[in-house]
Structures are given as structure tokens and as C-alpha cells.
Length: 282
Image (cartoon, rainbow, N blue to C red; front, side, top):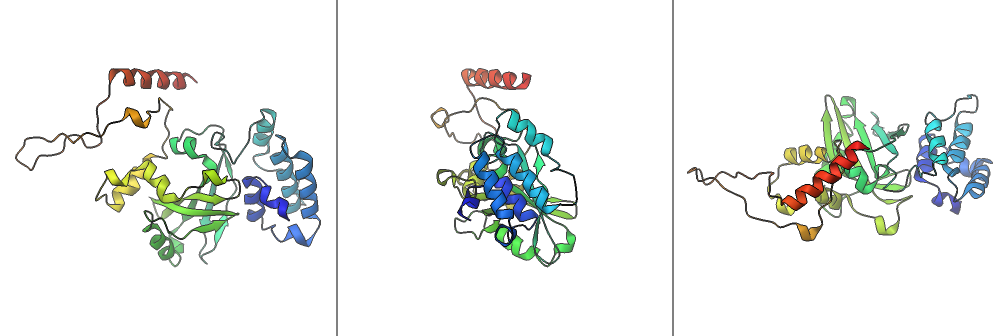
């Protein structure tokens, strides 16, 4: 029904993961889902009540609730929105590529506090890690070819759980390759928040300032955006100035001495330190 497009992304994801999409029309599950949705719409209890109904439908012979039920309970008590907002950052989403080339969604992973700077900017719900082990070699050429287009605006998107995903980068981990996807548009994403994966990547690594960046270096630097950080003072565009690199007079065409470095004023440094120590104490 039309109401399903207004369901939180976590609900859409779990409906897809449990393969309950057809049940929305084939039995009374859809009507029960709609009844609960209308009864709790706009309330902090909405997500937990809908998840309980989904698990009741998907695992009728089990008394087990969602593995993250306690987490949702705390969210509803604190009036926190679990997903669909950048300042929530409460869930991480994963999937894996099977040997047949299909994508299997994995259980969402609760995350009380996100320490990753890119999650703080866009919301952890916009990202999905797609894991591919060595047995998926038949399917990898498609994804590898897709990945090479990461700087293009017209890249082909993967559609999962009502969202359109573009590839940001891959992160080899032993015999497993993890493709980090970004939800450009779809369920739970407002029109004004739609953004393509290449633009997100450009925010992490301004390609105009990094000409000739190899794919290997690109992947390593993208990974830094997903490492744990402590929030600090955010410099505004007017506070930044692009200056030429400092080169050494070493007779070697001038070795660049400022790769990855820059200059900062005492005032800005004090601001950074103050914000950093304040967030560190929290």
C-alpha cells in the first residue's frame, strides 16, 4: 500500500531481509502493519512496535524478539529516532554477496554512539557494507567495474530495500572484499538530502586538489573517513585558504615538503583544542 513508502528505513530493511514483501498483499500482515503504523505514527514507539510485528510474522514459532529490542526500547524511552536522521547514527547496515550473485541482507547492528566523522555528517543509516568472499569471484567483475566509475555522476546504482546505492570504495580484508555503499536516494531520505556517491567521495577527498591520485591511494584515504574520531571545531569555507606547496631546494625538482600538511592560526588552534577537549570529556 501507499503507507509502506512512509515506513522508517529500518522497517523496510527488515521486511526485505525476511522476504516479507509479498506478505504485505497476500495475507493480513499488511493490514496489521498499517494498523500499528497509524496507531503509533509520530510517536517514539513506532519503530519498536513495527519491528515486533515483523518478528512475530517472520518467526511465529519463536518467542525471541529482535536482537536489538532492548536498544529500541531505550530509544523510545529517550524519544530518539533510530534511523533516517543524520544526527541519530544509531544503526549500521550490512549485506553479503552470495555465490549466485544475489545480495543477502544481514541483521542490522545497533550503534549507541557513532565515532566516525562521515556518519556524523550523513548518518550511519546512509551506508551499507557489502561483503564479498573469495567464493563470489563470478559476481565480482560487475562490482569491480562499477567501482571504477566512482568519480562519475552517471554511475549505475544498486537498489536495495527501497534505496538506491552507489559505491564509495572497496576495503580488502584478507580474502574478503568489502564494498562500502552509500544510499543516494530512496526510503527515509528527503529530497533535499539526496546526494550522489561521487559527491560524498569528493567531500572526503577533493579530487580537484588531488590530481593523479591512484585508485590504491584513493581507497586508503577513503578508509580514513570511516575511522573513529572525536568531534572538534568545524572550519567554515571562509576560514580556509589554499596556498602553494613548500618545496625543498634539494636539486631533485624540489621535493614537496607539505604533503598532507598545512598552516593554522593560534586562534583556530585554540578553537580546535577547546572543542576537542569538551567532546573528549563526554
